Image 1 (cartoon, rainbow, N blue to C red):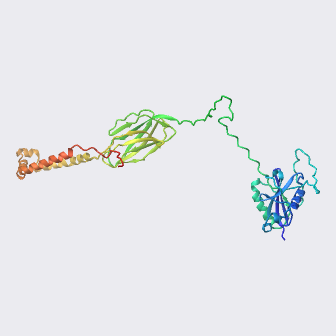
Image 2 (cartoon, rainbow, N blue to C red):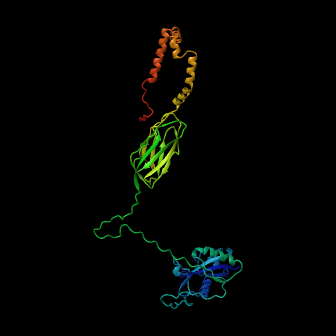
Length: 403
C-alpha cells in the first residue's frame, strides 16, 4: 500500500500554516488531527476539525472512508480550523481538552489570548510567503507536485488571508430618515450642468449672381457679430440672414445648396468663437439658366439656425462670340458687296434694280392664297410661343382619402 501525500493547512486567527505529510489511507481522522495539533502546539482550549472540499470529516472514520477514492488521487489538501471559525457548526469536530475518562478539562485563562507562536520544527523544508488567499490554488498545485517525488514531512507558511475590504461610504440621503414634527421634506439640491456659452451672429454670403458654365467662382460665407459692408463690383451680389443665437463651443455647419452646380467643399464646420469667421467655397456651374432656389444653410447640432436665399443665373457668352465674329467678317463682306455693286450706294444709283427684281420674283411666284397661308401659319406659331403658360402643378401636394 502506497502512502498518500497530504497538505494540511491550519487556519487560525487570520494566519495559515501549511504542513506536508505522508500517511496511509487507513489512518484515522482523529489520530491525524491529534498529531497535527500536538506537533504545532495548537491551544487545547479550541475545538478543531478537518475539512475537505468544504465539508467536515468525521473523526472516527478512516481517510479512505471519509474521502472516497483517496488512493487514486495524487495528493489531498485538508483544512484544519477551529470550531469558532466554522460556519455552520458541525458534529464532526474534536476537542483536545477532553480528558480520557470523559471528565471536563480545566478551563484556560480568560481574557485576550497570547499571540500564537508555532514551535520550531527541525525537519522543515521551506518557508513561503505570498500575496494572500488568491494564491491558494497555486500553492496547492505546487505542493502536490512536490510530494510526488518522495514522502516528506515539512512546514510551510501559507500567505495570510486578505484583509476585508473597507465598507463603501454611505451615499448622502436627500431626505433624513426621521423628520421633526411639522417639517416638510424637500428634495436635495442638484448642481445643474453649466449652460453653454452663446452669442448673436449674422450670416453674410458674397457671391457672383451671374456665372458661366464650366468655370470656377468663389462663394464667401461670413459669420460675424456685426453687419458686413457690401462691396460694389460687377456681377457680385451680397445677401444676409437675420441674427440668430449660436453656441460658441459647438461646431457650426455651413452648407451651400446650389442645384445644378458642383460645390467644393460640399460643407464645412467652424467654431463661432471669434467675432468674424469666414469660409470660402468654390462653385462650378453645370447647367444654363436661373438656378432653382439656391441658398446657404447654417446648422448646429442638426438644427437649422438660418437660411440665406441667393439669386444666381448661369449664362453663356454667345453674344460676345457673335460680336467678335462679326467684327472680323463685316469689313470683308462690305468690301465684296462694293466690288459686285450690291451695297446700298450702288443700288441707289441704279434705283434699287436688283431689289426690285427679287421682290417682283417673290410676288409673281407666290399666289395670294399661298402668301396668306404663310402669314397665317407665322401668326399661329407666334401665338403658341407667346401664349400664357399653365400653372405648374409639380409643386402641388394634396392629400386624398384612401377610398
